[in-house]
Structure formats: C-alpha cells, structure tokens
Amino acid sequence: MITTPTANGVFKQCVAPDQDAAEADELCLMAELSIIRGGHWYYYDGYRYERLSDAVAYAQLVQGRTRRSNSPAAS
Image (cartoon, rainbow, N blue to C red; front, side, top):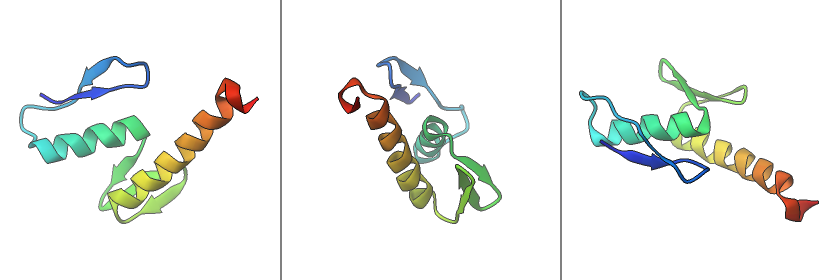
C-alpha cells in the first residue's frame, strides 16, 4: 500500500491489489495532478502528451502558478 500526502497534509492510500509499485505511483501522481490517460496519450488542461513526464511537468508548472497567485503574499 502506498500513501500519498495531499495538500492539506492528510495521507491517502492509492493502490489496487494487482498493481506494482511503479504503476501505483504513476496512478497516484496522475490523480493528484488531474492528468487523464487515454490510450497511449496523457491529457491535462486541454493538451495531449505522449509522455507522462511532460504532462506532469506542465501540470506542476500550472498548479504552482495557481498556488502562488492565490497565496496571501501575492496580494
């Protein structure tokens, strides 16, 4: 069982009995970043990616910008 921290510090469990650790980690990361897989493509924010790493990099960039612009220090 793999536990993943969420934004509020609570850990969630994200693994099915028939998954290996690497696949479970990928699925948890995709769920955290709202990345969807369809066939051999990964989708995030209206964009399509061939590699999960590219989708993750863009999602982290966008979500980092969103967090910074919503923080009290940004006001």
